[in-house]
Length: 100
Image (cartoon, rainbow, N blue to C red; front, side, top):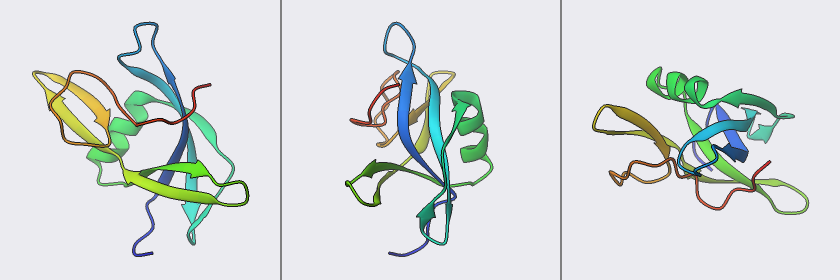
């Protein structure tokens, strides 16, 4: 599987305009296994990513967590966004993760 990320993200919460993620459900990844998740805000994710911690999106397959896409920070003008691609779009985007 390669190097495991530090964290996985399984769920997201967006602002009312659906542009910025306000919170995510984050799981520690230990020995390629996901721990129970906790809720953290977007600034924590951005800060972690800027400190070279790694994140992947993750989905539940019915019996195990599957790690999916790398999560990165993209700067558009002076604002940082959390994305799974490097498109310079002024919007957070972690794909089709469920919302809470």
